[in-house]
Structure formats: C-alpha cells, structure tokens
Image 1 (cartoon, one colour):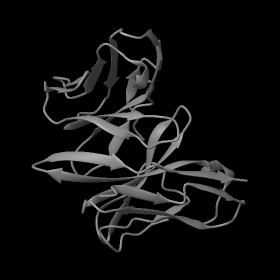
Image 2 (cartoon, chains in turn yellow, orange; image 1 turned 60 degrees about the horizontal axis):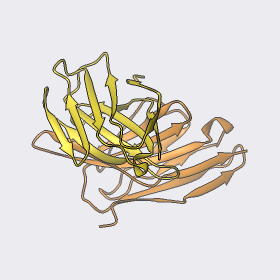
Image 3 (cartoon, chains in turn red, orange; image 1 turned 30 degrees about the vertical axis):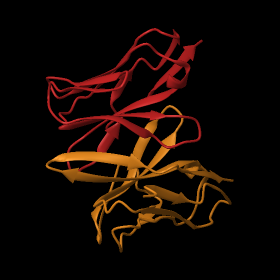
Image 4 (cartoon, one colour; image 1 turned 45 degrees about the vertical axis):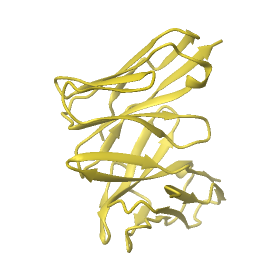
Length: 110
Length: 114
C-alpha cells in the first residue's frame, strides 16, 4: 500500500508562531485534502485542493496543491493553543482510494 | 444532518468472536470507506464502496467483510477477531461534484481484541 511522506512528524512551537508542514507522494493525485484530528475524535476536514498550483485559505490556514501534483503544503499563521492536534494530508483521485500521510503532531506552547 | 455516525464507540472482544461495526451517513454520498488507524501508521483503507451494491478492497482487507445494500449504510464485519485487529476504526463518506471529491469522517469505534 501507499503512504504519503508527511513532515515534520512533530512540532513544538510558541503561541503566535507560524507553522509549515508538507506532504509528498511518488504518485500523481488530482485531489489533496488536509485534516485535523483531536484526541478521541475523527479527522475533521480543513481544506480541499483540486487543481495543481491552487492556493486555498481557511481562516489562518493556507494550503497549496503542488505544481507537480505530487505534493501539498499546509501553513498555519499566528498559532493559538486550540491549533493543537494531529494534522493529516490525504491524496487521491476521484472515485478511488485516498492515501494518508502519517500525520504531523502539533503542540502549541502558550 | 447528523453527518457520519458510527456505533458502537467502544468495544472489547475476545479472540475468535465476530462483530459488526455500524456506519451510517445522511448526506446521500455515493462513496463510503472504512479505515483503521494505528499508532504511527496513519489511516489505512480497509474496504470502500462507490455505490449501493458495489464494494472493493483497500490496502488491508484481510479479516474484514463489507456490504452496501443501501446508500446510507456501510457495515464492517469482523469474522473472527484477532488481537492484530485492535485499532481505531473510522468510517468516511464522500461525494464528487464536478470532479471534486470531499471526504468526511465519523467519530470512530475503538476496538480492543483480547
């Protein structure tokens, strides 16, 4: 099976700092999704990307669909304590399987 | 809309027992999937369905069965539980509109096999 390479594996940052994480694949995808998961909960969809080069924002979150279609990036600006959680990327093609990264665990220090 | 619902939330089984994890969605989504989540492994696809009556295997299908008799429901059956099936199971549903697919997850079922 295919798993996406997601980095970094974990991050410890001060409140107010910006965060960047990325996801790479050996396969081309036409969809990239970014999720956040909090303890004991299911993943919650943050941002969906459908076009190479697309840049999409959701509040303080911005994600980009890489030009090669093999990678995607997520940025969080001005982090706050409630940003704590595990962030997952997922790549896929319509009607087919989605493949997930192993997650980036984010800790925000007040 | 309730979105994607899963029952039970927690379950403890003995090795060899069978059970069914329930999943339902009220968003009229065509696609539904089952994933398992293990520490350090991310989410791995077990089975998926692109519509009622159609199912297919994912990355880790062994030991699990699915059926899709209605658009709303997609149960996952463990035929003979094994300790290796201790995991958190997530059901997801998705739709594709104009070629754009979005996937939503349920809250999960935490399964312990002794």
